[in-house]
Image (cartoon, rainbow, N blue to C red; front, side, top):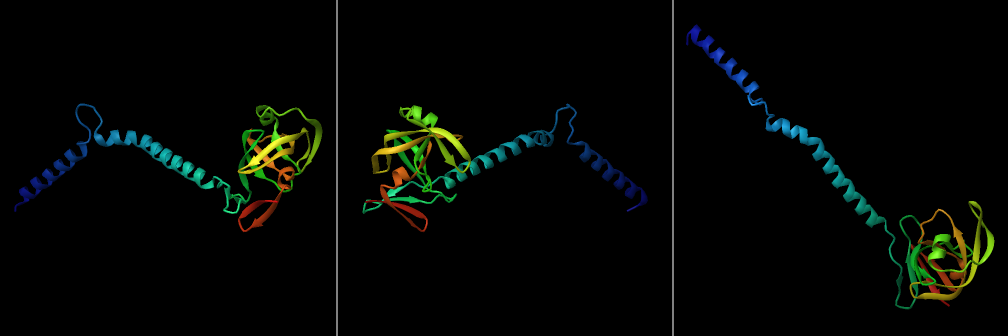
Length: 194
């Protein structure tokens, strides 16, 4: 191979390299597939993370949801402990569905003013509740029907005055719980009829 052949071969290699570098940009001025993909990449990333976060939200919502209270074969109501350490049970006050937080330290079953209106509860006797967060004005209503699962008590003293709570949330206090034997075993609370 002579000197001229080598120079010619180098010139050919340089020309091929220059053509390869210029290939993504066409003479029409339109972007190539690579640049179009780069423009769509942020949208794809956003969609991907939205799907991942939505899936995590629904999975955690299902995972953290308190388990339902069940009735055992001997008629006891078994309330499992929720992941936050509290006991929750669905019930009714004056025929209206409510989600109870079982509070053995509360004197009364207590609901919010909004729930009292929805359940058509009478006004009751005005009072001031002494709570851990200070004094709270409200009222006490007597003779209200309260039930949790099959456990029902027809004449319960009920406090009206929960503030800052979900409208359908209530405290299940001693005015209801005192009618039952309450047993704590491991991660469950058992309400046993007397």
